[in-house]
Image (cartoon, rainbow, N blue to C red; front, side):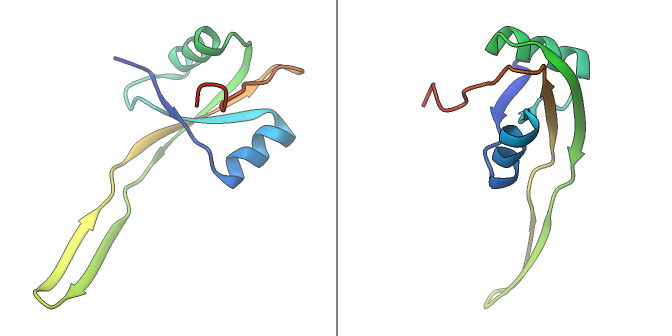
Length: 96
């Protein structure tokens, strides 16, 4: 079971990493802050100061089509924002 699923690369997350040295990841729903900290430190070789987590709720959508009303929802996931120590960075684009 992998704890880190993928990094979040959006405008907001990229700006947060450049300005405040915080990086965002999609993580396993069952993982806690200590497991996330250990996984980031071992995967990227950095020291983590703080970990913030949040459960992102699913978005529900309703569409009106010729055949009737179609409802659906996206998957819920857990997001972790990791604050690194001063002077350390993670290069997320190195493995692409």
